[in-house]
Image (tube, rainbow, N blue to C red; front, side):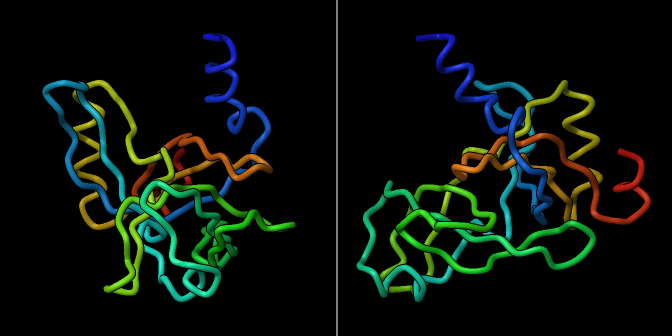
Length: 160
């Protein structure tokens, strides 16, 4: 059982395709979990128009967010569905708050925290104050794993 859990967690790192997503950091420390950078992505809030056509989703329900390359290997939102897309790059997430009234849904992908030693977490917090780029490995089934995070300016991206 433990081996299966481990393989499931690292499967995207072994077999996935790398995509880069724009991020916004929140807070680097937790008394209970240690030092980490909490990330929110531009795709963390999705418009409800795409999925409300199918039906109104429930909290915790799986949603598939399609991604499209826009520039320099950075991907952005290109639609969402409650059904797994037949092709293309997509990331699987779970709806965390209902957007029936607001028209938007908050989605969690399991790639929202990067754990690091205290010094690295504090440095990342400082470097990512405006925006960062997260390197995500996305497997063919939409499961994602966070590989790395860097500042969004070109100089820091190239120094990975």
